[in-house]
Image (cartoon, rainbow, N blue to C red):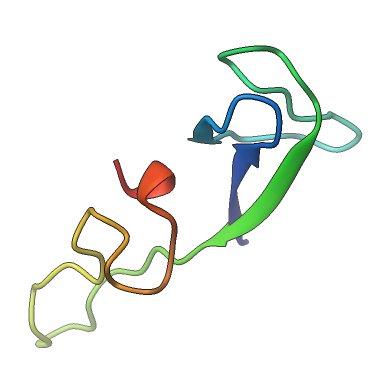
Length: 70
């Protein structure tokens, strides 16, 4: 199941949340529902593979925004 992150178009806050069917996400900072949905790329290294993070935590990996990495 994909995990989605959101960036608020009103205040710029980035966050992730778990939603169930028919729920709407709202920014925890300003409560706006005007959000851009982004796919979070979270993966566990393969067994026997390198144990290095896919993201550098600053958005430099090209897979996410700095707001979602922090």
